[in-house]
Amino acid sequence: MKITTPPLLIALLLVTAELHAQNFDADSVYYTPISSDNKKQVRHGGVFRDTTKNDKLYGYFFNLQVGSLVGCNDCSEGKEITFTASTIHGVMIGKKLRTGVGIGLDSYYEWQTMPVFISVSTDLFGTKNTNAIFIQINYGWSQSWYNESHREYGFKDTEGGRMVGTQLGYRIKYHDLKISISVGTKYQRVQANYEYPNYHYTGEGIMIEGVPNTTSIQQSMNRFMFVLTIGWK
Image (cartoon, rainbow, N blue to C red; front, side, top):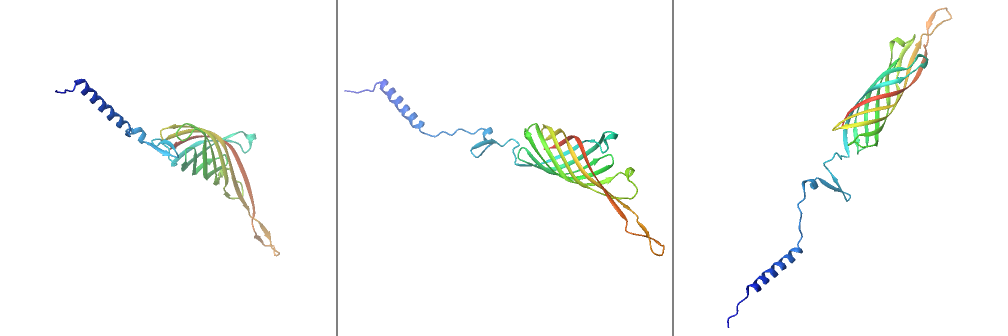
């Protein structure tokens, strides 16, 4: 007796084999290709950050500031509007803090000064990557010159003094260029030294020159400040 395998049975066997093959495949581990966007992310403390953004901890910056000083020594004669300018080179720390060293030139009605100072600023709202509201403090010492038209008899020389500046401003970011406007105050201490000849007579009636008389006049100037700043980075 000849036994033949029905075509239907053959088909069932093939389907069963295929199902078993799929079950084994289900236990395998599949690796999904990482997209180019994900490759630009780095894990820091369990959090993924996009390293394509400007997220460096330290960076160089440069500012050029120009503006006006408004105030008076003798307010009965009216307000004085004079000129201020400075440059600052420094380091950005994180996204909000900046610290640097600056040198400037300030003009007053009777004085000219050249301050050298340390500058510290921080963003109150926003960061280095966005528009921001910031505060800035400058502290240093200034070399001074007294205008010749105001020198009196006996003038000898001048001495500089402490300088303190504060600013509150708004900064606009355009790529690496930063433009800001700010208002603030500036305090400047200066001193003018005078020396007067001193003569006296000896017992023989001869006039000789003695130790000169000296005097110093210190002056503190307080001004409101309006500043435009153009910066890089």
